[in-house]
Image 1: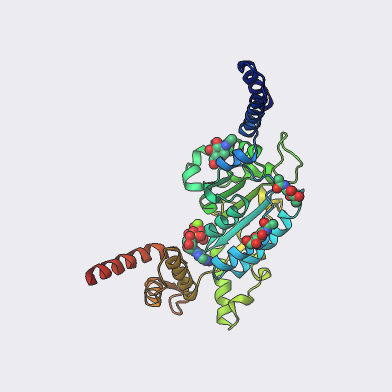
Image 2: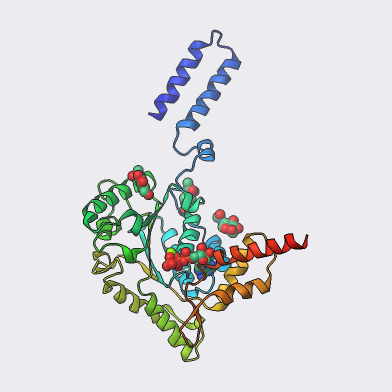
Amino acid sequence: MKLLKAAVIFVLVPTLTPAFDPLSVSVVAGSAVMAWHLFSSDSWLRCRFQECCNKNATVNFTALKAQLDNRLFGQHLAKDVVLKAVLGFSNNPSPKKPLILSLHGWAGTGKNFLSQILAEQVHPAGLRSKFVHLFLATLHFPHQDQVKLYKEQLQNWIRGNVSACPSSVFIFDEMDKMHPGVIDAIKPFLDYYEEVDGVSYRKAIFIFLSNAGGDLINKAAFDFWSSGKRREDIQLKDLEPLLSVGVFNNKNSGLWHSSIIDRNLIDYFVPFLPLEQRHVKMCVRAEMTARGYAVDEKIVQAVADEMTYFPKEQKIYSDKGCKTVQAKLDIHEDFVMRDMKARA
Ligand SMILES: Nc1ncnc2c1ncn2[C@@H]1O[C@H](COP(=O)(O)OP(=O)(O)OP(=O)(O)O)[C@@H](O)[C@H]1O
Ligand SMILES: *[C@@H]1O[C@H](CO)[C@@H](O)[C@H](O)[C@H]1NC(C)=O
Ligand SMILES: *[C@@H]1O[C@H](CO)[C@@H](O)[C@H](O)[C@H]1NC(C)=O
Ligand SMILES: *[C@@H]1O[C@H](CO)[C@@H](O)[C@H](O)[C@H]1NC(C)=O
Ligand SMILES: [Mg+2]
C-alpha cells in the first residue's frame, strides 16, 4: 500500500513534466523520497511530527536510575525492585512474557508517580503517549453488572494496542476497586505464550496499582521503627511474601483469587513505604523548585505541619503521603503573592 502510493507519484509526476531534463529528474527523485517518508510507518521525518512506537523499548537504565534517585523519595525498596525488573526485561531481546508489576502501598506514596517515570523511559511522551494506556477502575469499569462487557472490551483494546505497538505500557489504577474477575480477562496476554492470535505480547509492560496490602506494609514499617531499626534496612524479603498472600486473599484487591496470581504471572510485588515528615518536606521542596521558586524553609515546614500523621501517638507517617502537597502549596503561594503585592 505504502509502496503503491509512492510508485503512483513516481510515475505520475514525470508524465506531467514535458521535458525530461536533469532538474525535473531530481524533483521527481525528491518527491519519491518525500512520499516514502510520509507513508512509511517509521521514517525519520514522519516520526518528527507524529509519535512513533519505540519497537525496541530498551529502557536506558542509567537514565531511569537517575530519575528515580532524584525524584522518588523514601522508597528504596520500590526503586530497587523496579530497576532490577527493568534491567532484566529490557536487556532481554526476546522476553518469554510481558513484564508485570504490582505496586502496593498507602495513599500518596508515589505509585502513580513511579509508573509515570517508568512510562516516560519507554515512551518519552509518558502518560500523553498514545502507547501508554491508563485504566481507572472507577471510570472504565464501574458497574458490577457489566463485567462481561468490560472483559470483552478490555481484550479488544489490549489486542489492538499491542498490535499497533508491541512495547505498549498498560497501567491499571485503583485495582482495589476493580470487580473481581475483570482482570482475569487479560490473563491470556500475560502468560508464557509465543503469540496469541498472531500477536506477541512479550514486549508489553503491565502495571497494577492498589492500596491493597498498604496496611500490612505500614505495620511492618512501624514494627521496624519501634524496634529501633533503620527504615533503609527493611528488605524486600520482609514484605514480599506478606504481600502476595495478602493480596490474593484480599476480597478488595482486584486480584482476589485471580488466576493471574494463581499462575504466578506477576513478576514483582513492589511495596511502597508510608512517607515520614522528612519525605513530605522533600516533596514540598521539589514542588517549589518545579514552580520556579527559591526554596523557603519556613513554607516547607508550614506545609509539612499542616499534614496529618499516624499512628495517633507517635505521629510518624503522613496520612496522605505527599498527595496534598501541591494543593497546600497553592494556598501558601496565594499568601506569598498577596504579601508581595501588599509590600509593593
Ligand atoms: N515517594 C515520593 N517521592 C516524590 N514525590 C512523591 C512521592 N510520593 C508522592 N509524591 C508526589 O505526590 C503526588 C501524588 O502521588 P501519587 O499519585 O503517586 O500517589 P499514589 O501512591 O498513587 O497514591 P494513591 O494510592 O492515593 O493513588 C505525586 O504526583 C508526586 O508529586
Ligand atoms: C534495538 O536494540 C538493539 C540492541 O538491543 C540495537 O542494536 C538496535 O539498533 C535497536 N534498534 C532500534 C530501532 O532502536
Ligand atoms: C542514557 O542516559 C544517560 C543519562 O541520561 C545518557 O548520558 C546516556 O547517553 C544514555 N545512553 C543511551 C544509550 O542513550
Ligand atoms: C487502545 O486503548 C484505548 C484505551 O486506552 C482505546 O480507546 C483504543 O481504541 C485502543 N486502540 C486500539 C487500536 O484498539
Ligand atoms: Mg494513585
